Length: 270
Image (cartoon, rainbow, N blue to C red; front, side):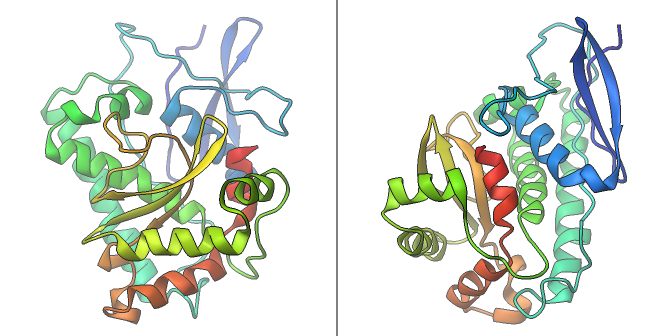
C-alpha cells in the first residue's frame, strides 16, 4: 500500500486516489492542471469530499491521520498557467512578476521554515488551518499567504472573463439578488478592508456569503469570523496593485473583475 501524502511540486501535480481499498498515485499533465489542482487544493485544505458535476464523488478524498508517522506538511508554490503579462492592461506584468516570484515565494519559504523550526506536527493543510489560532505569527501569516496566493493566481484568466454560470450564478442570485449586486457588495468588502487583507466569496454549508479577512487570514482558519469553503478571493494588499494603481484601490478592484476565471470559481462550488 502506498503511503498517502499530500504533496505539490512546481511542474507537476501529484494526486492520490482510492483504488481497490488502496491508494495509488497519479501524475497529471499540465493540460489537466486546473481541474486537478482545484480539487486537490480544496480537498487538502478542508479535508472533505468536493463533488464534481453534483454527482461524482471526488476521486482523491483526504482524511486525517493523527499519529500516522506522515512527513510534516510542506507548502509548495503552484506554477502559473499564464505569462506575467497575460492580465494586461488590468494587472501589469511587473506587478504580477514581483507578486509571484518575490512575495508568494517568500511566504512559501517562510512557512516551511517555521514548520521545521517549530516542529509543527500537522501533516495536512486541514490540520494546519484548523489550528491556525494556536500557531506562531510566522507560521500562521506565512501559511495563509502561501495558500491564499496559490488560490488567487489560479482564479485569474487571460482573455474575456464572461461571468458566473450555472449553479454558481444561481447561488449568487439567491444569496445577493443579482450578479451585479454581488459584485457591488464584494467590491465594497474589498475596498473597505482596513489595511492589508482579502475579500472572499465562500460557500457556508450551501449558502454563499461575502467576507473579508485581515493580513493573510482566510475563511478556513479555525478563528475566522465567517468560515466556509473559499470560492473567490481578492488580494487587496498594496503589493498586489500599487505599481499600477498607487492608492486607487477601487480602480484595481473594478478592473480585476475583467480577469476572473469564472469557470474555475464555478468548479469550486460544483
